[in-house]
Length: 446
Ligand code: PA5
Image 1 (tube, helix red, strand yellow):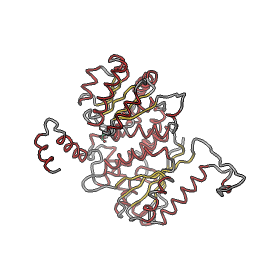
Image 2 (image 1 turned 120 degrees about the vertical axis):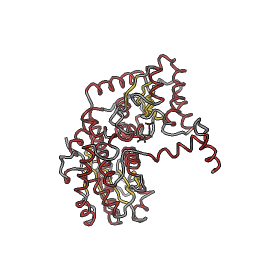
Image 3 (image 1 turned 30 degrees about the vertical axis):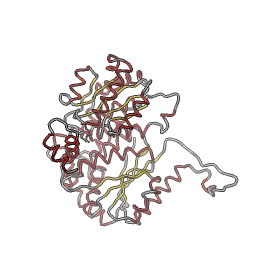
Image 4 (image 1 turned 90 degrees about the horizontal axis):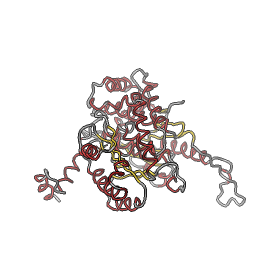
């Protein structure tokens, strides 16, 4: 099997020189990660997750997925942030884009809740679940996050009213902390099947725990391939790898070199629309890990060529504070050949007989050159195909690079203190018991 690759050859000579100068620091930060002697070192469980997951753990996840697959036509994955985006990224990347329209389905439809507080969204979800056989995977590491707790309360009631309390227990799985949090208390009281999110794995690094693996298995995707891909990159990026062979270290060094030279925004671009949510997952990973202490690259994303018709102008000629990282897919899964047309009114006969992917690849190369010419430094990640194995590689590559990059930047990449600010205000405005003091002060500011 191949590995994903990283190409920084389109960076200019000054940046390449800066990357070389940061090699030692990147290696040092990788060693700090691996030796566990840096900031946030109580959250490094993800580092060896791929290689340490046991046959027993995989089988338990697969058996639980089998029960849900047999009982349910729809499974609602309830969670937000790191308890949501990894699953969504894999399912969107690997399942047929129009799966939900197929009359004959092999896999349950995975729907999502608890990732927003939209009343219309919850209403429409409840409506669509009426008369359907559904189950719920409720995911919250802390077990106290408002968005998923609220959605679960509503869906649990609906499920119990639909199939009875006893059967509902067999269709609800909770993934949470081993001991603490409201979800743990509830799951133990109700007798739900549960999986544990290890204490030392933060939400955004948890896709290779049951948080991601269970719903992904329910969707009919091979979690063994996903994990195997991650294992390959775990090995390829550990401290024994030389800098010029370590794709995570090079990516971390390149990002820091670009940031130091004034590039404050990184745009993750794809030319494969099914990778949209990989970028959403990546944005959380880098945004929450690095955006602190007044520092950090702002992670943005575009789907191309779609967004060349909306954001293309800004990227080409807007403020030169951006760089671009492109995920390029070598081989699509399917072949579509462009037909010849007798009248050729659209003038496209020069493309007849070519694959759609050839046009896409030329758009990709043309865009890369145009953006580089326009002053947008380019980094390219190539994945051989969109499969569970290579998505597993991509996840681990980005996670490891994020740890290294965060340490290079001088922040603790494994906490997220800033996420609490909105919660405190929201609770005060909602008169949550315990927030009486803040409540008055905050309401006075409205
Ligand atoms: O990365 C993180 O830790 C957070 O973004 C969490 O994933 C998110 O807030 C959800 O938290 P929880 O799983 O505790 O409900």
